[in-house]
Image (tube, rainbow over all chains, first blue to last red; front, top):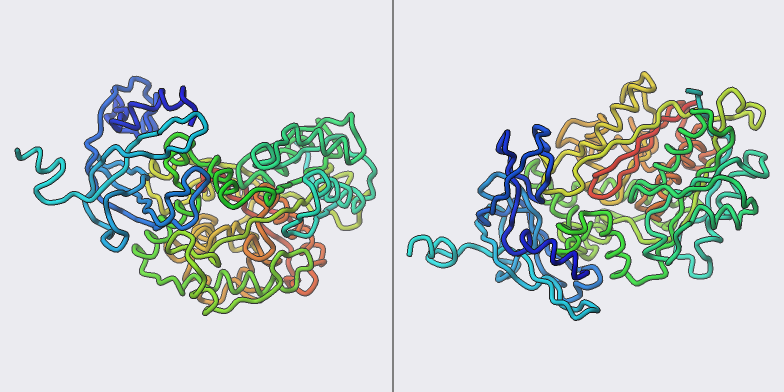
Length: 141
Length: 383
């Protein structure tokens, strides 16, 4: 990924920064200026919870160039607590441990690191929520 | 606006053309379509293509093809709409003729994919997704379609085996198409035992990487009979779009772009799904076939797979699909596939379908889908 592009995307990639429509409150990720629901153009920036559940999942055996170390990794369609959906890789989990409906939380992980410019790109991935650990545990603490 | 007809068609065989270049394939299809129309030179050439820049380091593609086809000087523009580029280019040529801007336009769909390895091609195809929020995360089209297929199977209660009829039927038809990449049958067992690409999508759920070019020549319907005694009318030509990413959709298991483009096409032609005699659909993956049948109004939601299981889709069924092998067996040179569908539909309507001829057909529909069904182009053709 090109450095300027990575720089522009840092809020979304590191913090799941989204937009909430000032008029109808609809949340959008990727962020968008004009609301898909009502057409209003006064969004405010919000940070998503990063918590959700797996709606669908696939194990990928034929990755794209730049993701050759991703053979056998998991890609999921996730529904976040805010009611919006996002596609992302799963991490910290074995394929046979994943099932639809499973609760997951966002973490920041390396997306790819073999860029020609030597850039290592980090961004959001999701991992299963473990009882007593992760965000849930921290909230209790 | 003027009515528009197709007066010539041409196509190259689809396959891995190691010894043939982008320009050679394109020129062959263009010259073949022009010869079919009895024409030497069009007034404009539009090239439908998705990835010539990424896969062949060649842009300005329409100029290249006009030059090497032997008529530099004509208007020439490339049209891109991801995997639907080959249909979008016919849509663009149809505007050009309908508006009166030109009388004779050749539209060529072309893709040369096999110069790169599969990882490079997968990365190239991923440029049709959201570059920042899908492709940058290593999410390929096969993965996106696999997410849909699993969701579909779980929501509607199907097994992998239930998707087999799409593959078996396409390959049966491919056997009899001399231009097809795969001319052998596959069995349900072959399908079930084929290796996974992104589960539950296997190699045999997927259309192949390949090269090819197909072309059509368009003119105003009122002039068509001076070129051919079998002109085919473009009764509808309609494009629609959806969100580029899968995430933001209201329902991921509904192809809104395909639905809207089909509805616009039915309205333009004054027809309904029940009037259509055969349907060249976008069988890039089996799940896309099922959801296209639903979006185009041939099956209820969740019933696309049932529709195929009930033997409706073979050549003598209620709605023959992929009559010359479809993307699955004829092959899916991405930016060319939409044009192949239209060439095949024209041949069916002319009675030149060969061993795959659909009997007594008068109305054919084609639907080409690009990206994660984020763009769709539907045509209805008739005698």
